[in-house]
Image (cartoon, rainbow, N blue to C red; front, top):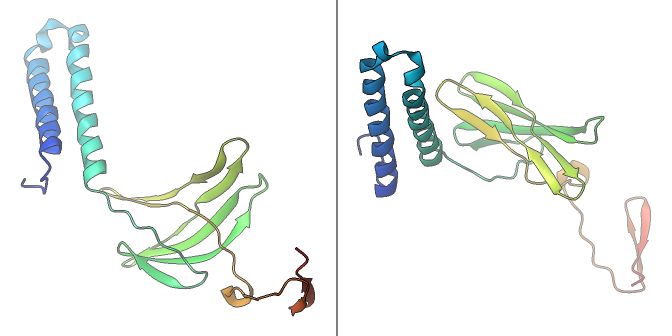
Length: 174
């Protein structure tokens, strides 16, 4: 409750992990004269308790936002200013997106990746900016390319007619 937990199941999990940590730590410290080999179970339980703390902290205290980033326009997202500057296709065929980011005076560049894996669909690899107490993940969802200036053109074509689109003629056949 002091650190903001309100869910009873989460509180019970944290209490259980804290109990396991303290009980095994006390047992390990008092049993040091029994030999190092007798500590393995206690150390394993201490490690599992720390793992549970990590699961709770990342699951309960995370923030998520899903936004579209227009090219060359800054957007404020979760306390960061993000600007999508474009993408490149790597030699392995993967799309690497370039995002300039800043938080306060700190500036960094993120490059998440998206690619098609045969038989598995679209795969996404986030890029992560890590700090001591928090991480900032950016993962692409899709690429929606625009026309000139980022704007897409819409045209209404009657079946059988031809219209000019840029330097091309488009005919609605069927």
